[in-house]
Length: 125
Image (cartoon, rainbow, N blue to C red; front, side, top):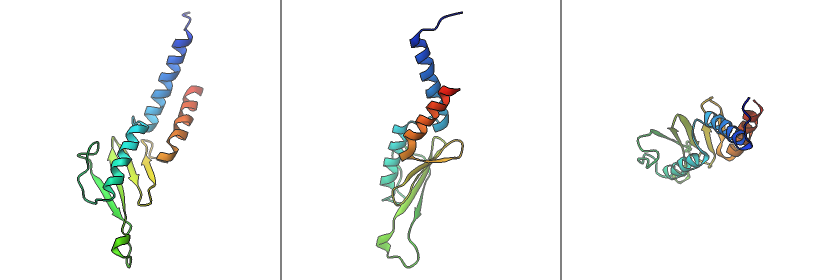
């Protein structure tokens, strides 16, 4: 029986955590998600604009919040894009959500909570 060092065990645990989080978040990092939402926040102000990197060649969908009878200056837009297989959605009121590979939705604000939950689950198995 080969005895594993503490470093080997620590490295295996880290690899397990990373693999579980990559699977859960569809190989998207929190930093990438933040960058996508930065671009969406600009695009929300310019409906129909061609998206810059990292969203070049991705279909962006704008939806207006304008209702019948509202003055045109009250119009705001929600923006949605599919990036690396995940649906990113920025609502007109600033909520940032994304649909994960398992079809569940999370808020970007809850990313760390989900990452910790996935880490704990991966370490238990």
